[in-house]
Amino acid sequence: MVRSPIFFWRDERGVSLAEGLVTFPLVMLVFAAFVEFGYAMSQWNQTVKALQYGARLAAVSDPLTTDFDDVFPIGAADPLNNGNATPNDATLSSVCGPGPALPNCSAELSRVVTGSDGDCAAGDPRPGICDLNWRITPDKLMVTYQRSGLGYWGRPDGPVLTMRLEVRDVTFDLPVLGALLGLDDVTIPAHPVTITTEDLKTCSTC
Image 1 (spheres, rainbow, N blue to C red):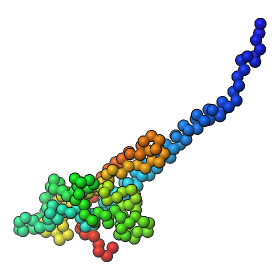
Image 2 (cartoon, one colour):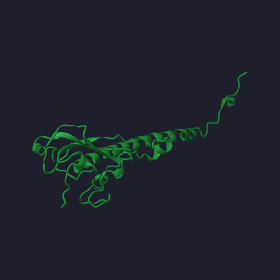
Image 3 (cartoon, rainbow, N blue to C red):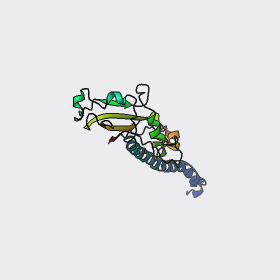
Image 4 (cartoon, rainbow, N blue to C red):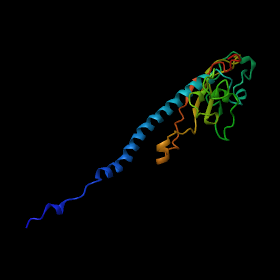
């Protein structure tokens, strides 16, 4: 006896809708991941460029550390040595940075970060670091001055040093993946930028 095919018939109405409801969130998540990956790369690039710009600005600005004059005196201990080359001693350093362990930053650091007008608004005649990346604030930067072996004792504008500028505790801003996957606390790498200083004297007419 042959059974009627009607016993094997299924009602498949709504299957496409159910499949769409399952796959749509996954597709949107993948799309958001691509968009936010590009956004994260933009933040990374902004951080690097801001640090490079800040290092060049700091290299011709007043020292950013409060103990600079004590660590790097202009004159030699023996006045007869004035005019001789300064020693290449990288162990001598002046550091300022975030946290209570390194409270050695001078007010000049804020000028390097915010620019000549003291804020991060557009149109600053002398922009600062935060004009390139508003998320970098003075409490997120670490500055290190070290002897370079250049210059001489008694140099009127002070020793020629190397300065390293790096960022600390700045996280990526990921609106979607940060909220869904808890990735809003991923820290941007420090990206240290090392540059040779010049006269370390802020232009008063700038």
